[in-house]
Length: 309
Image (cartoon, rainbow, N blue to C red; front, side):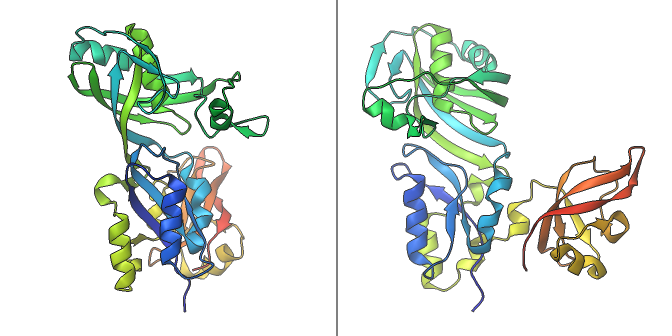
């Protein structure tokens, strides 16, 4: 029997951890099937959680740089130790009336590249221990700022102290910390109340499936119907099609010249690409290399990671 392989665009519910969802999926699959998630969500968060299955677990590293989009609800006037509504209340202040236009001004201050201090209640490590473990034991350590980028942030509505907004950001961005900083800039403090990830790279919430859907498809022996193929899951990477005569070279990890692939001429040097066969199946992920800077049609594609089809 062929090994089950693909990526499940799972809709995580509020409550369980990302690892809990992986365990739920693993229980439904044949024994020893590789399973893992791409892009951790906090227990209180909902939304898109890609689950890689079988050979598709090789895709993990290619999701790291994907942009992520969230719908967040924050509360002005409340500060907690976790920077979200589940934490211990540290301060509470009446925020006053905040017009939507003022809320957008506060959000816009977060745009672009900035340095963010990760929250203590996070999975990052310090001296070999998780920050959230140290925080729960009453310890706080200095955290190094990390560069993040907010590409888009928009106020959707405000109801008293409750602000709903959409944000598209880079990896490593803590929405809790954005809410905390927005509240601090406003003057009354703030924390995250609810969070839903609506997109991660090519994975959209509108196309996601529930764990109940997964159960049903497994019972009907149709799980493959709701799995994205590796080629689909890497849709954020440009596609080049390898001529049949060069497929074996790709699968052996050898370079292929531009004349052996299609749709590569206009790609800049060092562009990471999907290397597909004519039916559109993923052969490998590779990078473009140009032999002459002014002649982009002269060069080759070097496989970086090969996928057996």
